[in-house]
Amino acid sequence: MQIQQFISTEEAIWFFVRNDEEHVLIPHELIRGEEAGLHYHKKANEWIVISTGKFWLRLGNEEMTLELNGQTVVIYLPKDEKHAFKALSPVKYFVIRDCPDEEVYCL
Image (cartoon, rainbow, N blue to C red; front, side, top):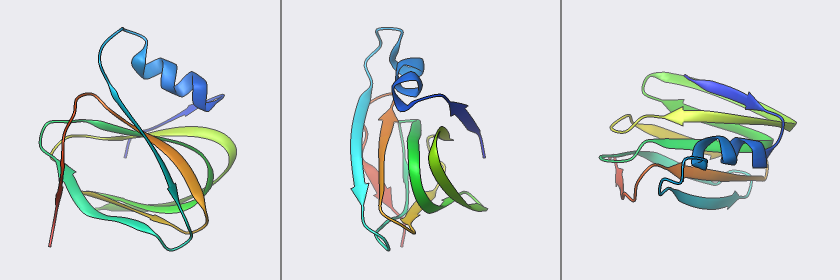
């Protein structure tokens, strides 16, 4: 799993959108126990930008739990790679996509 650290959420977002290319920026807010079920994107690479909260993440066959207290991390989710996310505490985060795309949910 590819994870980068940044000083702030703003710095992380600017790192990805600095080239005047079109990106999709989607804010998310989940309560404890809420999840984004296993899915993938056919066209878009995604990056989760998050700085607070505790969550579980699955990417392909890898799983991890992270608890953040102010440090911003960016997690890369490549297109066509199945992933899922579950809030273990209240979380707010952004998803950046490199192009518009729909989620394809797995059964």
